[in-house]
Length: 226
Image 1: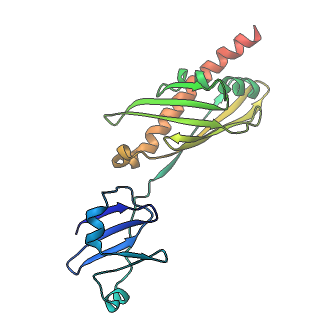
Image 2 (image 1 turned 30 degrees about the vertical axis):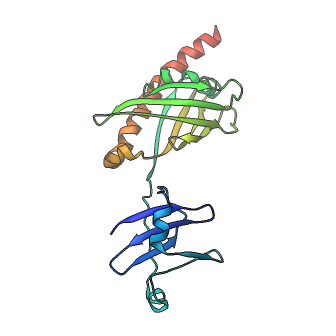
Image 3 (image 1 turned 45 degrees about the vertical axis):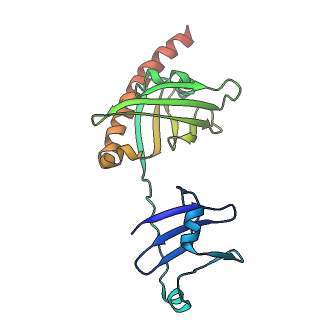
């Protein structure tokens, strides 16, 4: 059974050919369009009061026909998290992590972060890494949401790879804190076959990144004190 999609200024029509005849249906989820002239004559449809009339079918056939259901792929979202104790105060860890352009120093799978000069709450991110023998590369534009100083940094993507996340800072004493990183993302289609193994893989990357961050934050703390 073949399906062809066509478009008009006032409506979108899907033509579905079967042994019984030609049926024209309204469908707002059509992405591929073909030239209309030849297909309109084939459909033999007329538009009346924003409804399509079937030219080839009798009224009894139209009443008995069951509604056609369309299934579209639902992309899977995954939630990942990692946490670590850092030997610096919350204020120092917060300030260190707030410098988004230095994040690739401790998260090597992030190849670059560029803060927009005219809109400092926006930043462009690039990711390049090898995941289960697949070289992947993604990018996105993220907006930093209103932070809670020394407690929370969070963001969400506006375009590109869909994702959102937060970094939270919990005091453990005068000179130490716990850093908790959570990331949610839509599994890219290219990685869908390995989706079940993707979460533990990424959580390992996040944990290793936080371990590097702990060292970077300690160096940052020493520089601030001097």
